[in-house]
Image (cartoon, rainbow, N blue to C red; front, side):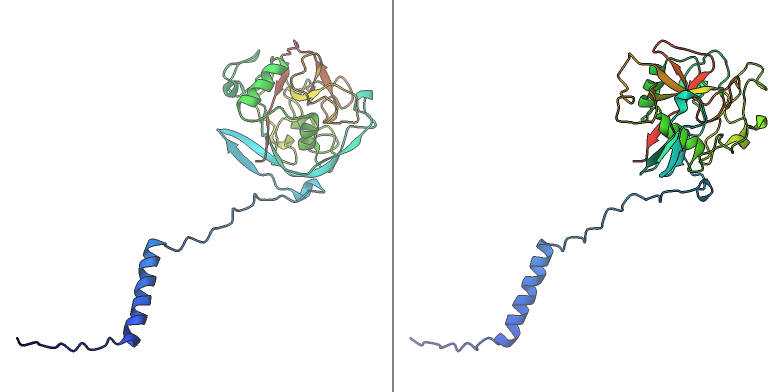
Length: 273
C-alpha cells in the first residue's frame, strides 16, 4: 500500500491575528451600535426681574385662541397709603417668576353666552364669582390674585392708572363717557398697561381670586382659599368715578358669594409653565 504524505504549511499568524481582531470588532459593533450622545433638555427661558415699567416690552401669546400678555418678575408697592382705609397700608409684593394674564376681559363669545349687554366682543358680566373662577380653571388657568391683577396694571412704577398717575378720560370707558353701557373689549388702546393689558381700568370691574381681607396682602393667610364659600370676594378696575381714584388700580370692591352685577366681569391668568 502506498502511503502519500501531506506536508501542511504553517499559517502566517502575523496576518491572520489582526484580521481576526478587526473582524471581531466589526461584528461586535454591528450587534452593539454606539448609543447616541444624549442632548441636554433646554432650560425654560428665564426673565430677569424688572425694576421699572419702561424696561419691559409687551409680549403676547395665544393660548387656545385667547391672547394673553406676559407679566415679568419684579416688585411693586401694593395698595395706597393715601387711599381708602381698605387700601392701607401699602406693602411691597414681589414676583420671582413670570405669569400670563388675559389681554382683555373675557368676552361674551369666549364665555359662550352673553350677560346683560349683548355683543360678541363685549365683556361677559353679571356672573357669580364662582362661575368666573370655574371658567378660568376649565381654560387651564385661574382668576388672578389681587396682587397679580394690581401688578399687571401698575408695574414697578406703582402707577395709579395703567397709563400714569392722572385720570385721562379718553383712556377708559367709565361713567362719564359710557352712557351706562359697556364697550367692546380693547376699545381704548391708549389705556393699555405696561404689559399690554387692556381695560384694566374701566369698562367693567373684574373679579379676582382673593377674599376681601385687610392689608397688608398675604397670600398665605387664607384669602386665596378658592373653596371657601363663606367670604366676600374682591373685584377691581372701577368703572364709576364717584370716589377719588374710583377707576384706579388700588381701589377695592367686594361682593358675596351670590353677588352679580351688570358691570362686574373678569379676566383669567395662567402660570408660565
